[in-house]
Length: 156
Length: 430
Image 1 (spheres, rainbow over the protein chains, first blue to last red):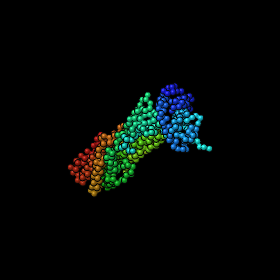
Image 2: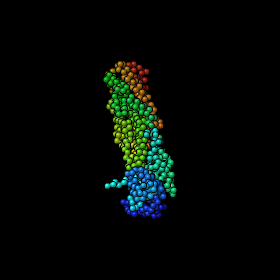
Image 3: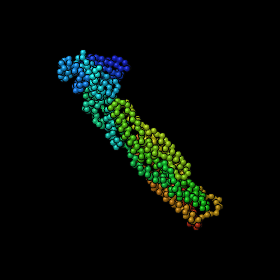
Image 4: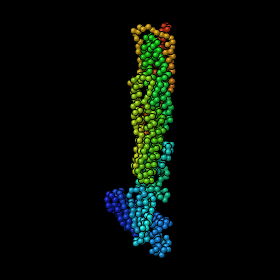
C-alpha cells in the first residue's frame, strides 16, 4: 500500500496488532511517527487514503493542539503551566511571555492508534516540549472528545 | 411516535442509520458543530451529513483525490424493508361485518367472542315450546315427522348457522382490531431501530431492544372457541372443534421481536428480521383463521342437511299409525304461533347478517394473503342457508296449519291444500 505522504507503508507485526514507523515533518518539527493498527487485515487502501488526509490536513490537528495548550495556561496547576515556569526559569529569568513560550513548543513524537476499540479511545498521542532535554506535556487526541492534556505530575 | 408519523419516523431512522454506517468506520458528527462527519469526530477528513430526514449529504471534505460518498445504499436498504408496511388498513371497514355477524350469531344462539351463551333466545325458546307441545299434547300421524324435522333437526341447523356466524364474527373481529396493532408494532420497530442506530453511533456499544408485538395478543383475544346454547349437533361440534384449534394455534404464536447489534449491518439486519417476524406472525394468524373458515365450509358440504333445513328430507308419515288422535285448538294454536316466532327470529337473523363484503375490507396483499376469500365463501354459504332454512320452515308451518285445519274440517279443499303443501315441502333441491 502506498501513502501519498510516506510512500510505501508496510505494517510490521501479526494478527494481534501491527506497527508502521517512520520519521516525518509535522508542526514545524522532524518527529518520529508511529502508526499502531490492531486489525491489520482491515487496513486497506481506503484506510491509507484516510491516513493521508489526516497528514495532509495536519494544520487542523496542530491548531487543536495549540488551542488546548493556550487554554491550559490559564490554569496554574496544569502541566503546561508547570512547563512554562520551567521555561521561564531557564530563558526569561522568571519573567516570560506565554506567547513566546507557546511559539517554542513543538511535538516530540506522534503515535497514532488507528483502530483500537473504545468509543473515547486515544487516537493521537503527542508529547510536546520546547527542548528534548527539558520536560514535556502529553497531548491526547481522544475519539469524539478532542484534546486532553495529561495532568502535571504531583510534586513529592 | 405513532404510525401516523411513519414517514417522519422513517426519515429519522435513515439519518440514524447513516450515522451508524459512518460510525462503523470511525466517522462521527463534527465536534466543532459543522454539518460534517469527521474521522474520530475532529480529524481533517470527512463527509457532509444528510439532513434530519436522512436526505442528501456525502460531499467529501479534506480528501480532494477522493469521491463523494453516496448514502443511497443506506436509504434504499431502509426503504426496501419498510415500503410494504406503508399503506396498512386501519380495520375500520371490517367493523360493520363484525357487528352484523355477531348480531346474527347472537340471534341464532351462538357467540364467537368466547362468552357463554344463554339458551333463552327467541328461536330456541319457541322451538322448545313447540317441541314440548308436539311431544306431549298432540297425537297424529303427521306429528312424528314434524317433530323430527322442525324440532330435532331444526335445532341442530339453527345452532350450526349460529356457529358459522360466530366463526365469521371471529374473522371480522380479528380483521377489524388487528391492524391498529400491526400499525403500532411497525411504528415501534422503526422507532427502536432508529434508537439502536443512534445509540450505536453515540457509543459504539451493542444495542439490545426487546419488543413485544401487540398484534399477537389482539388476535388471540379475537379468536376464541365458539359457544352455543344447548347440546351440540355433529356439524356444530365440528365447527366448535375448528374454532378451538384455531384459538389454540393463534395463542401459541410468539410475540417476541428484538433489535440488536454492534454495527450498522448487524442492527439493520436485525431490523429487517424484526419486521419479518411481524409479517410472519400476521401471516400465521391469518393462516389459522383461513383453516377454520375453509374447514367450516368443508363440514357444511359434508352435512348439507345439518346446515340448511331445506336439504333435510322430512320423514314419511307412519303408514300403520293407529293411535287415538289428539288435537286441541289451544295447543295447535300455540304451536303455530311459536313457529311464527321462529320464522320471525330467522328473518331477523337473516336481516342482521346482511350481505358480505365483496371486496376485502382490509386489503394488505404486500403483507399476507388475508382471510377475505375464505370468509366470503363461508358468508355466502351461511346467508344462502339462513334464507333457504327460513323458507323451508315457513313451508313447514303452512303444512302444519293445513294438516290441523284438515283434521278439524276435513273437506276436499283442505285435503288438496295438505297434499299440495306436503308435496312442496318434500321438494329437496340439489
